[in-house]
Length: 269
Image 1 (cartoon, rainbow, N blue to C red):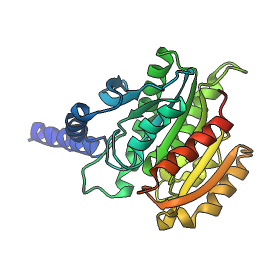
Image 2: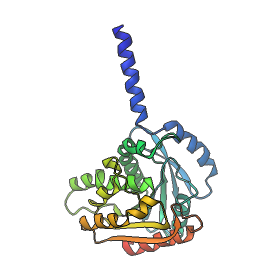
Image 3: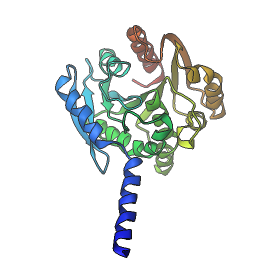
Image 4: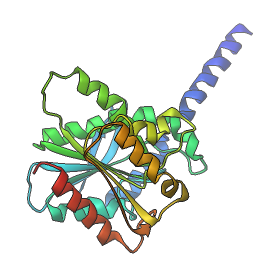
């Protein structure tokens, strides 16, 4: 009886752990669909220390030793046709190499708040992407996130990256030169998902970009996000509103141009 009880507890712990981890089977299904359909760029496999995950690397028309890492939104993949693909392909025409990576995902019926534990899986993925770019000769890197991908990136910058930067030798040059947050929400049900709290700690150049027909939460938190950047003392925070909904459907060219223009002004060439 005791042995059965122990086995039941162990099974329960496994199920509990899996409930708070990325759905690797779903990631594989996405990869199976995406890899053979890539028209621009090439599939690369990165490792977060536990698992391989998909990235799509696309070379710039002129390599200037700089790149962006693109993080998609809730539950999708690194070649999603809305926002992600336009940026990962379009920015290469502005001489930025791009690396779009698979973020942690859950089953289709998962709620937004269910993603909170997965935020702790983000740092190893971003750091694997940074290593890949550095090994490829890239010196200047900017992180770009859309929707929940931007909230995950903000959490990374305000926690893991901030801690790592503090451990580095004083005056050491950092690889990450900026952060483009596209359609970043301000949910606070979990501290990790609270982008306002994250922005209060980020001092890197930030572009806070949103659409004039964006989601209600994003439009309602415009002032809160600006105030958070001010609290951080971030003098390189820029907030821009352009035409478009949360996915900038029909406004992809304006989205890419706005991001590219900011990158050229804010980031060392």
